[in-house]
Image (cartoon, rainbow, N blue to C red; front, side, top):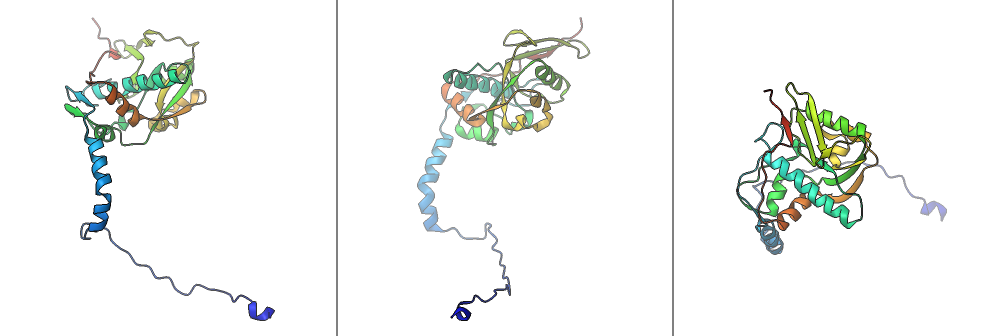
Length: 241
């Protein structure tokens, strides 16, 4: 009996592989198209519904040190993240820094929709809050001054003198206080050192809000009627007399 129940060794004799190319030569499955059509149409309607209006086209290339679209994104993240923190009873957001490369499209003059947000910010990045003290803030400012890219920021003003010397830094309209802890909103990508922003490693333990930047855009678009943003003096080079 024991001999009859013994399991015989199994060995692999052959593997057969086939490849199916999925491209435009395949015909559509009408039944599948009919099944998904209501959901697709509802999604398209939601993506294309106007939420706000842009009186001017906003881009990330219309300024040397700050741009209209970069300023809009940084300002709206500051507003939305600060509102979230207020609801949670946490310290307010003092400033925001994002990265120039994350902006993937312009906002054209005209209606602004959810699709606009997906086109400008296609990534799934969430907003992080990083407590940062003097040395970390100084490293961040040095990075911005040295960078050749107009990285978006808000809540912060930087003035450079002739020759690029640092003349003034204000946070929240007040002179930078090295003894304070500032709460900086940014993306998970930058907290992890993306785009060389290693200064976040000098900050304290970051907090993931779970709030996607793209969702902050949609919430802002829903809340305002008109998008108003322009190149301004938050980062300026003072010319010699």
